Length: 375
Ligand SMILES: [Fe+2]
Image (cartoon, rainbow, N blue to C red; front, side, top):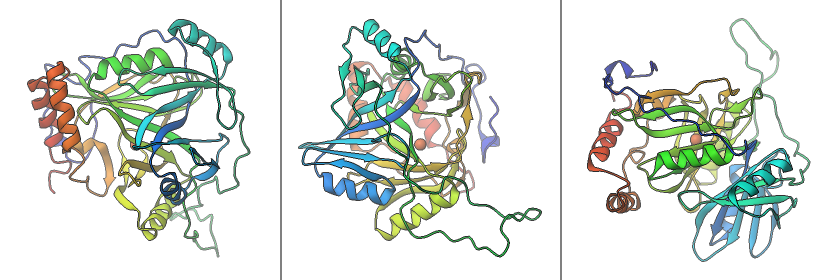
């Protein structure tokens, strides 16, 4: 349970109900998904959003009046898919499996059909709806594309005793930071346990780290793909309670710290709206930088994240703003302050029995602590 971070010595944890005293129980999964492939959006203005995503480091794969497909520099045809709509909204996500047998098994167990995908690269899909109403598309056989040439190795770094660069400078051009892959998506759910269980059952996700309230119950769960002995990112789907339902943010991997920083320079030059960073997360260790898209939704650049095999056991920690980041810019004041939409969601949740006053008090107490007590 010990997690050392700035100010953690000031944190008093309830020893009667320590984090994890209400552990997340892993149900038997139907299948094990391999990776997150794309997010699904409704967009009012496809041109505006395309311009932001180009600045953010994606490339346009296909576009017409009704749809926009943006790709990374990797081998999947799209990491972002938007349908033209009257109102912009996050609709869901697509994951991939490595075997058609997985699709067959999932279709049988969920009483769904395997459908042909009508997007670039084709393939087949089983369409599910998660407990919060999001579309979850489980895909197989989407045709890969050729990766786009870009730098894929970290820049050589001189240290006091090691100098890989002699007579050479460290200069990157002012350009969008190439997005190499979609890394994770953070979702809000008023019924966190139910939603975690759903993702574990339908996609085979494992809990890596879980932040808990003082009664030991989960408030944010970092879930990773179960890829057996192969490595998986610290988290691919994150489920949090109290910040509203649906999309919280999504994150895209770039090659190294210089790429995160250079991407920031470029986005600032383009007058895009910066949110938080740079910094390094504690759980997952990613060096991060957060931006707002044209609709005010969070998009994150990250690099140097932790990876795990399926052997790593779940760890539980107290919810505390201090353990969100190891170093970096101070957390924006809005991070744990509910906006109007989130307040309305909490009020609705109270009527539905999804929240209790005592839960809200505990959540407020844990998220109101100063992340850095000396600030
Ligand atoms: Fe993130």
